[in-house]
Amino acid sequence: SRFFTLSRYPEGRPERELFQLETQTLPDLAPGEVRIRNHWLSVDPYMRGRMTGLHTYVPPFELGKPMEGGAVGEVIASRDERLKEGDLVGHMGGWRDIAQISSASVQVLPDFGVAEQAYLGVLGMPGMTAWTGLNRIANCQPGDNVLVSAASGAVGSLAVQLAKAKGCHVVGIAGAANKLAWLESLHIEPVSYRDRSAEELGDAIQLASPKGIDVVFENVGGTCLEAALSQLNEGARIAVCGMIDSYNAKTPVPGPSNLAQLVVRKARMQGFIVADHWQHYPDFLKEVAPQVVDGKLDYKETVKEGLENTPDAFLALFDGDNTGKMLVKLN
Ligand code: NDP
Image 1 (cartoon, rainbow, N blue to C red):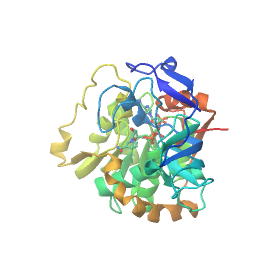
Image 2 (cartoon, rainbow, N blue to C red):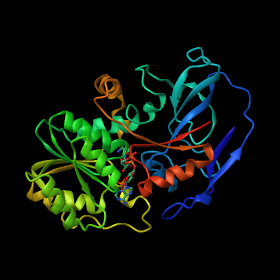
Image 3 (cartoon, protein in one colour):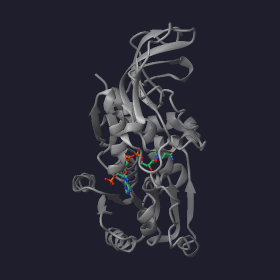
Image 4 (tube, rainbow, N blue to C red):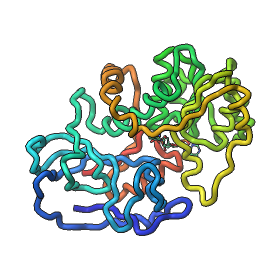
């Protein structure tokens, strides 16, 4: 099997050379283990947090050991009667072509008749994150004015559509013109953050949402958050999902200069980690999967081919190369 290891914890933006492709001969399967041929690998912004050597809510990647991540594949050998050859499964043995892992952490994919890689995106962790942040953290209600940053990404693109489907007025912040055009086609008010100060971005949000903002789904931080704070209505709720703007920062980043808006607007800001809400995954699937199947919720994927391109796919997240979910397809 071929797998990636990390040779050193990076400072700032990781260099491509830190990711090393290695080869090993797999031992025979032990009882309770399963061997999976991966079809699709997920790369996600949170993985940057596992490259710091610090234990946050997940342990760091161990240097020189196989990296991990979401993956979808096919069972090719099993020593657990729950799993048989040919089963399509989701698991965390990504960043490699063949995974040999404990079956306890392997899930047979639900069968909603969607493409298998959807369980890494719209019907997987990112989709669940959008649904959780909007409903369980921000308590989004019909009629709310909603603002989502990184709105054309895996999490953001579902967050904007779920809010729209609830009957909200939705503004989506994104970078490139094709992303803004996609948002517009979904009846989301598109706003570009490129080449804009926080004040200019705030003005653009105000134009797109003249009645202010009741709910913020924050994926970026930095100027996006500062601009969002400048437009809050009284009692606004801010779900802090991520702050990708600072993941590669070498020194601590300054906080928003206008945090006092939380006081003035009597607003609430709450961070969350989707893993803590996983007991609600069946509720999410029940609600969202039929809408994906019926084509009521649109989703996009950006696909890089070949295991060797996994680090490039990961790094490209920080350049905004992806529209929708960034995936690696294995041959
Ligand atoms: P995305 O698919 O949204 O990919 C990342 C996107 O972020 C890029 O396409 C880019 O879009 C945008 N971006 C990157 N750098 C910057 C920057 N400096 N300023 C503004 N935009 C930037 O990733 P995900 O949907 O997987 O994740 C979105 C956010 O959600 C991340 O912050 C992630 O950490 C967080 N997250 C949190 C979880 C939780 O449990 N709390 C779980 C999953 C994700 P553009 O072209 O528009 O710049």
